[in-house]
Length: 473
Image 1 (cartoon, one colour):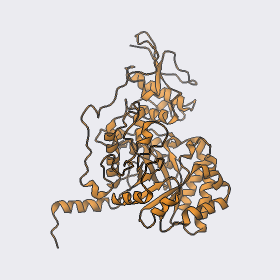
Image 2 (cartoon, rainbow, N blue to C red):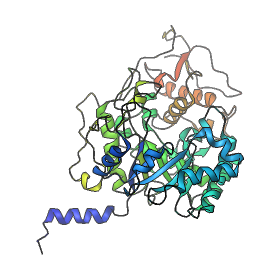
Image 3 (cartoon, rainbow, N blue to C red):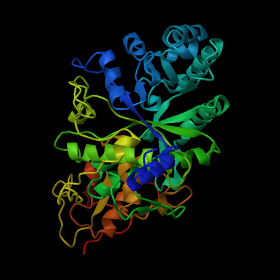
Image 4 (cartoon, rainbow, N blue to C red):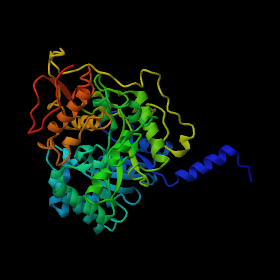
């Protein structure tokens, strides 16, 4: 028998350590006109050791190409079919027969995502979600494949009412009884898991003046202490995931497991999309792969080894929206890597995060925006309020980090406290932004939050809440 070198022995021990760790998959989106054939994509996945893939439909060419590949597949029933699947058991049965049973088990379908971020769907399909999930599951039972294939639905972090500190995570109250309780009961009864889409990039992009880039990219940093339970977080990803775990715990569903069905970082963006770059995308995804494959769970759930799906396999040139939307890919359409990161334990042996030199790793300080000629004279009263035109997701992210790493005093906006009412995102964010602004001595850039806030000279009025004084120095 060949002698085992010391380095080989250490790596052998390392393999044993990570054998029960999490797993990495990838989202295979196809909103593009220049992608390789499904058969070539399957070979690409196999060549890089990617054993899990998530698709956003049930395209026959894709499912046939995956047949016999050994790659586990999560498919999607699109939002536009929720109404039909909820209303008709016959429709659900036919859909399962044509799109699932016809390919399984040669194509190793392991889960069905019923809809995607349904609560954020402008078509208001929320009320159809749970009935559709139940009918799809009943159809799986009919074909005797319900034990092998799980049914769930991906939620966005905007489904949370509170996400900071992570220990105070809670679901939006208007969704709890109509949707979350019946959905979580269904997941518990069927042995399924909650699907969650988490994007630290969105939070960093909107709050680069207060969020450490190292914290967002899994790099070495001092960490952020959760004031609720004293746990220290060293990555924004872990904090976001634990906020969802805490929300589950608050409803007494501690037994429900989680799969992160989407997360990623764009390699290119518009001028105002702070942090979108090849270097940051490589750091986020590479360090995330290392984080997941070496196990250890999260601070709140240390034994919760996660399955995480990177978004996305390719840059997709036909996607709408800002430049970043077309640049989340790990690969170009010609199958070349956008940046070099590993996807397997073996690949981690030689992986190093190529950290750029300063100042690229420093926090960004941005001038006050939206002040519109507000005087900075020492005799002028000034307050910082939320920009009501900012999207809910960005406003929530800014609120989380004002109350978090920003150090704002957010105790008055907790349930039952003096400034909890009115219980609106705009009111709570305004209080938190102003607290941060005053604590920073109303310094330039301290009322910005990526455009989510601006300075006013009239005292804000939200219910009976009294804001800290805005008297200048």
